[in-house]
Image (cartoon, rainbow, N blue to C red; front, side, top):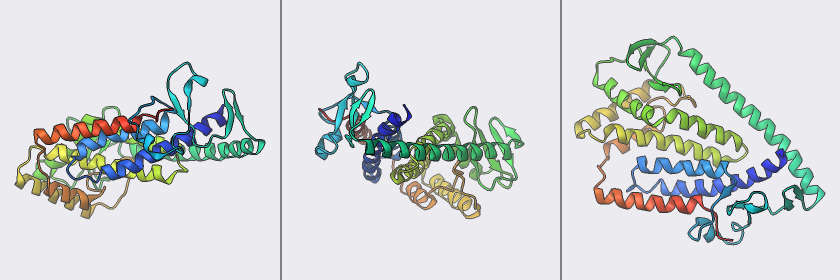
Length: 309
């Protein structure tokens, strides 16, 4: 069973890599706000987790030739009309799983063991890091609402998944405009449940630890998460307040030294790009919003579906 899962996981990793590569291009279209691009990353996660997909005549995979069109009807394993990516075509039957040659079976059996060990190590490190961060900041002093102060923090961040807390360094004046900008940003994270999405994205990446494109995609996913939260935080700001927000980013970046994977602190991720984005921010018009959403919905359908058989 495990070697069967691993065979299809590799196929999912290839599909996910293609989606990530296309998203890396799409995210550089300046006219589309990052808060609209950010949710599209969920498709990359789905392609890396789900072996099955509906076939579509507008699937992006239709345009990659026969290499990408190596798919099998999922009906061979389940009573569905879905299809399964099958780039290797190494099996003579899929239910039960039988490889075409004994050598192929040995390769996938050995690869399964290596992959399983890698996943165990990667997930163990994630759990250790997460528990360490929770323990390190468990005694933060309550300020108000879900805002806490901690002298160990050198940058503000959102802590936890269930009822997450906004952690502020004790050297920040909580009544200043700087603190207000930070809280607006962290509230945007909290409202969207970004800590959960960050953790899910990291778990998916750990399952594909052997794939460098998965790690590149996860890194860009985090950058778009921060850029999109900046857009949400400043959407009602005037030019003066946007300038103050950018100065806050710069100030936090200059005094922050730690680079945490869980969580990413305010000002620690892609600060230069974020400052530029804040200073050049323009509100999206109704026409621009309609065009952007229509374009991204079409892209989403093209990426989430398999090619026609």
